Length: 353
Image 1 (cartoon, helix red, strand yellow):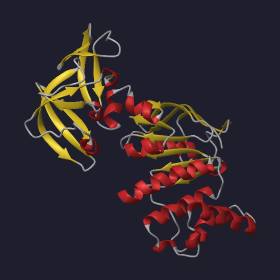
Image 2 (image 1 turned 90 degrees about the vertical axis):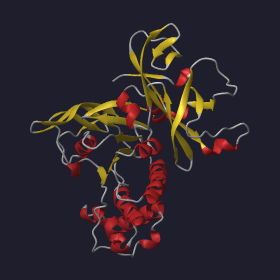
Image 3 (image 1 turned 120 degrees about the vertical axis):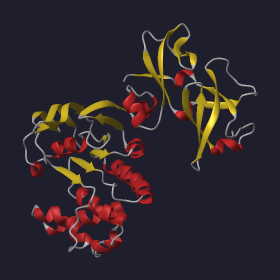
Image 4 (image 1 turned 180 degrees about the horizontal axis):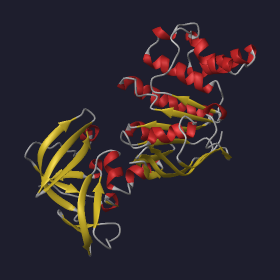
């Protein structure tokens, strides 16, 4: 295990600045995910940590050692790519063993490490098979085996599940996290998939235009986004311009109570699943932060109903879990129906543009 630390790292490709003053330190054995849209600099940052790209400015440390200008082969880092990068003419055993053979490791130790990695990944029965006939999921396990057999200080993973279909992605997402917990090695993982980032990470670093927009625990970043970009990229949000009011904030929906009154104009965000819906003519458990709205559109996704609502000039999005419809008194709403929307003060978050 080893800490990874980046200090004031920049990367320029000609006039294009791909990474801007990047600062981050991982803990030993931590699983950190870089997430962001295409072109935000996450893969470039990962490649600089691995030694596949050199920074234009700044320093990179691995286990306290300055590795900024060390070759990739001298960094004791294992890299897992999206497209597996397996050798099709080799067996599973030969693919996993390849980095150890290249190092000139004794045969007995190679066999022991390959057997251990295969057992960890539950692919022992495939060791004699050709990789060309494997499923995508098993190919990914072989690629992981080739990485973990080296017993590196840290793993770098660049969208390793990107080539898998949705069912395999979900399965491998859980497998990768379980594998990390067993090995305990520091892992830096790149993805553009928000759900993947939330499920797998100890900490998330949301990137935008070469910088970290916000870094923190998954629930912290999701529940308390600091900027409009983070709130919109990780899930979906409703946004309301707001200005100071004795109750908390004056908004296009009227005065709303907040946990703390605004000191200046700001932007409020609230997640769709935090808005609670009630029949317009029924009893409600709150007197404040109630907004009358009309159902304009309903999207059924299986697990939930998504209600697109119109409240004056404001359009809101609210989710209700279909499981909740089994509860006594639960309501399902129809097109054109008037409803009451409750916006809990604790779920109205002040964000910056």
